[in-house]
Image (tube, rainbow, N blue to C red):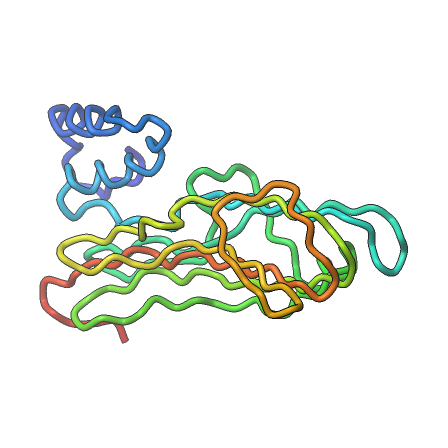
Length: 220
């Protein structure tokens, strides 16, 4: 354990056994999400609260409205990480499930894919008295300049990011499609959805989980 501070005893084998047992509980498809929470329960304040916990793969494909060339934007998303007993959460960062992943600048995305990035902003965690706040998520709005197809998938769309020590949970990841005729709807998974010029795709990742401060002080 290279992250352990000098003088800190290793995690006892019986605690390791408890963590492994909890991560093997059903549903098996949720093992990535359950691992951190199982570690937090077993290690009693030595593990951060939950993070936004989704790759949130987003694909928008079509023809560039200016050049006519086909394009495919394949993009994961960044979100908030959890607080600890000592500090607020960090972020936005990619999730623990991502590999060697990069964030595309807004100007490059607009030039390469021929869409408009209307908004890219931080989603700050709601501050509650006596808590370390989770790290911020990100809100991104793409406005289409031509027809395209959207495929995207996220987790933590209904179950909010978990907090610790009695702090309230954080928020959820969301995907909202806003049509130019005023209609809008939310999805967790879409595949090959037709979107038109003037439609907006709004992606919002959750902030990290909170941690209730034992001394009752809040982050400044």
